[in-house]
Image (cartoon, rainbow, N blue to C red; front, side, top):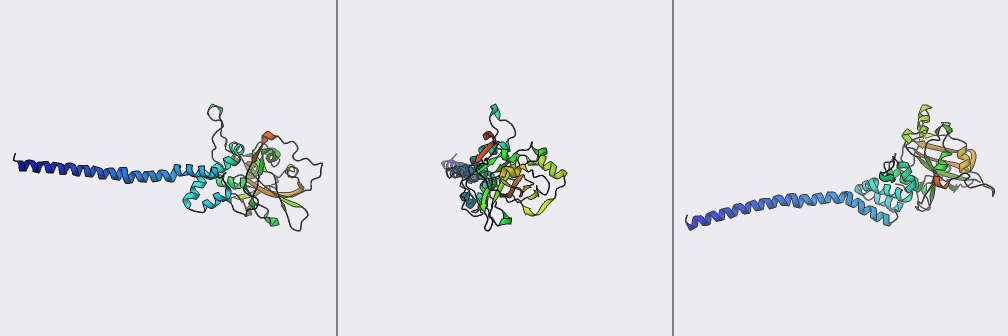
Length: 298
């Protein structure tokens, strides 16, 4: 073989290997470069960003006003908040209550189970923990609350005798002065565990209680039953609230959220705060949302 032919063959071989190398580099670039970057971006838009945002809001003690503002920035942030941040806020503010509402059985080794799903969604539960809906009939506006105490002992006072097996958390009434009235209005709210399987819902359906046409749940927007109109408001609810007998109203929505208001009776020095309370049955939800806020809600 002549030297010229040998040089030509070497050149063609080098070109072929170079082209193959270039092709493989191009393929590598497509799969390992742009593709990897795309995969990295996908990861960053998912769990990594969620973890980072959760850490940021944990450092802010899950300030509800800041979280509401962030939800208005973009659809992506709103989706992350609905998927992760509202749940983390609920757990941080009322861990025992959330564990009780979502319990499905004991965890491994007797550990408490991880929080599951809640009927109506985590944003609605977060709003219920943080937001007093007021009383529309007396022009009392809704507002962020300071510290709210939710109790399942109080909840039993709102259940008829046939439904005492249900688990219901109810807050202490949030007191509001009404211009031109001598007495204060109390607004309160609560939530059932497993409402779809509860005796309360079964009784409402069995009695064919009609859903209200003009009232909606202020926390999830669902339709509601009037417990007074359905004849399922026990007198023990008035005693528990410290309200005038019969001067209360409360509603339960199809998702199991309760809200209502009452006229509060004046207490005397001999009246007890909460006779028969058991501390083990209560759960304090420290919801430092600020009592001077407007009706901003998740």
